[in-house]
Length: 530
Image (cartoon, rainbow, N blue to C red; front, side, top):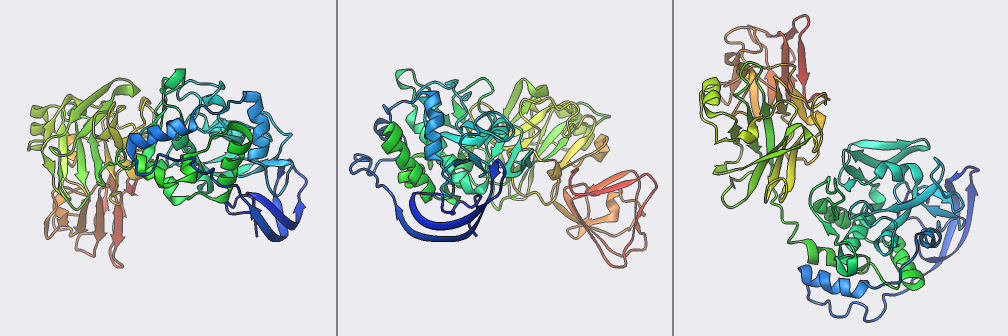
């Protein structure tokens, strides 16, 4: 079966075929192929000598050489782009239609507009990221302009590219695209296509002759004020590698070169150029340093802290690696603290707000003290590598950048937020199911310097779930009763485990004869809040 959502379907090249297919009568055409016999492909070749002078070059030297090759191309008007797309993105199973980039849906060429069953022009590098609008050359460059279902185009908006959370569904049905705050994830079949268009734009437009100077960075929310930036570099590189160039892209590249602009996308012709240019820039270490707990105790407002956890198998040395914890207050101003010392594998690192109050509440010294740990329950925390929130790469996130946490599902006022046991890697997108947030919590409910523990119920003191001495940890008595960062096993004991009030754990194993009693009005949450 050859379907329109299959990237390897025969919608590419100059194709001579004998085909029989049924066309359903609806604006959004879906095809069922009954018989398709391929007889020949005809593809154009890369012009001889087009990439002369690039052999052996890497980094910015190669990027500059490619810019000199592909700039100065023929410029189109925005109106001419619409007509060109009818050719470059033509549905090869129906010459009257085009294929939409993000959805893979086939629309009649005549159905152009902003309606729910129409297509329009999508700037893959959103025109607000650099403020070039619909003007030539950047705003009309066919190498990043594609047909797109109008509602999908609106949903993508100016989002950066990264892994999304929520599947996008419009009035015509579900797409294979996902979104999150400031993030757009296209369907798998075109992720590499999208990446190579972004790589092209960052190479073609270097700020010469009044043109925008476009750059790719390794974070999202890159252009709140129209900055000429796009992210996320590491994800785009991964998509480029996972979704290699196919004949559809090659054919489109040829069409743009021979029929319209007289320039090519180098990253379609030479996919290895991506690694040659951006490998060193994308050198974020492979580490599993995560934000593990955020504490804002109701009874001790100055005993706040943030706990980090090293889930890798090696020590992280903050002398040789530059790390910052950043706090954004109410979605506005930022405070940063550079981490010092080191954190061993499987250990924690605690940043407290006020030394005296922290020591009084928890009876030990934090690894670091800083006003950056003074979150008021509606502040976001973000972990950066290589610099602060301005210069660094976002590695892990609690909350959403530029959003006030008041009333959000990540608010932790007079409470605590704990990373769930099974989360073993950082994530630059905050996800509710990775966290448990207590309804309220005092300093006695906090678990500083303690994360990712495996506990077993022994009931040696009482039936109370919240009594630490009722739990065994590594052959001894647990330092705390369980929270969401723990995996717990309930065994048959003289005293059965009894939950009163609010309780949580990251994972739960109950032996066949064991019992857990929930008192009326009590709750036991296994995993995150979602």
